[in-house]
Image (cartoon, rainbow, N blue to C red; front, side, top):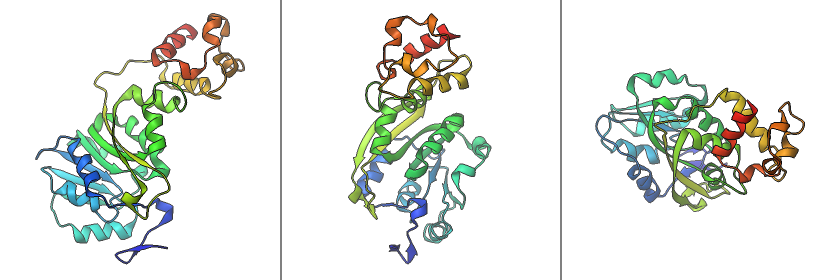
Length: 258
């Protein structure tokens, strides 16, 4: 088990500590901060990113760290009245806590094993966000940004519907200690000002999952065992793969089926 400053690096938390300052600089440069900004970070580790954030003009920085060793370490090492450290699992946090000080900016190297649960949490609570920069696996970044073809699917459609995304720096494994086995990517995001309303929204997203159930198969094959009335869909559309269809195509199809 590797140690950093005498503290063990715990595999169960997916701990990989960023060590390249230019990556941190890129994260901070991508957002707009001033002395009224509320910022939060997920997983501070030894505080490499935290130190740079707290050196910016901001009103407050909240840090959520699940590992008590690192929460205590950063509490001792970084003395600033604007910094509050919560020794908590972010997935268990009631986001109503953020309401009074919104909008918030997120700057975080996300724990990779919980990336999608976190993204769904952000979507559910998107009203608290101004903007943010997150680090994710390169493969996940590609899924989030795709608009057709291989890798394009439910996550692409779902998260692009609610957020604007921008691809930033690619981050190699050697930028971390210990290095992960995957390439990483910085992504900028912000909630969309206007989101197209969808009739029976939860059911629509379940429908999208069905359409992509086996991406190489046609819509007809993916939907034929479902309750949907296939006779209202023209044969040309039924022969398409979901990866060939846009969000507008799916919304039109959903309207037809409704």
